[in-house]
Image 1: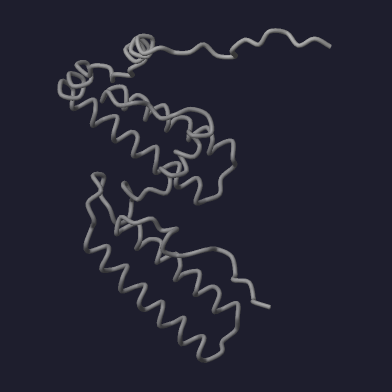
Image 2: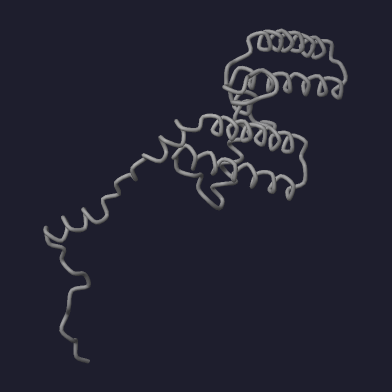
Length: 194
């Protein structure tokens, strides 16, 4: 068997070629003249789209909380993403990514407390009265759960009161502008060590 003459697999890239490629693929951001005109020239339309995005986001959150059918949730998420794309185009920002990223983004958006019917306003400001009311309710419910546990009440009664307590804590987290899932911890029971 004869071995042929070897040849390089890749072409050596010389410095002038590197400079040429750098210029060609530099990746400069597109000028945002249109974006500044759009957002500055039509704040009413921007506000309208922002409100629509907020309303659609709330609808998606409600559907997920009610554990609605996946097809319905997917359809509403698609509407939400379309509205977000319009808003991003209007403001000259990059649109949300496609495919699985959209569903992940929608899940994150559904958990975001920036616009909530209880506790925060449309611009993300915290309603202090709602926070105080919920803090007091969490405190009272916590005492009730502790009392039931110390009295060794029925497990079903304790579980139902704990569920009420966790719901109040989620509402309080949203009212404070925090992620409710991060505060309530995991959903499963801890495993016993062997």
